[in-house]
Image (cartoon, one colour):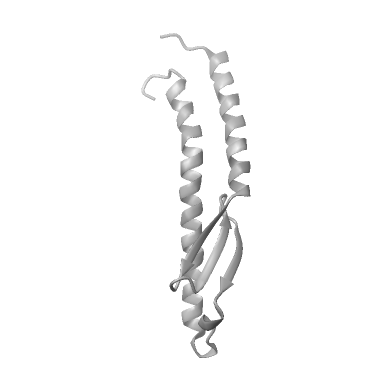
Length: 107
């Protein structure tokens, strides 16, 4: 098995191009997370940036702010989990292609 450094550089450059495209695509996509049966909805980009939080008017109770805070945290966490899952599904194939196609022993 011959190791060709120029081939390695071509594969790395191609992976960088594919990674940049995937990251651009992720930044343009939106995922949502909800809590309280949809009373709180958080939206994030596929790259993991929180972009909005929507509250159902019936969940806003001045006497129970703590519950609302918990619902917001749960909805945001759910949205960010969805963003991570989207990232893994999109970027995993790009990064995985690097090690599989290099012809390096043990990879």
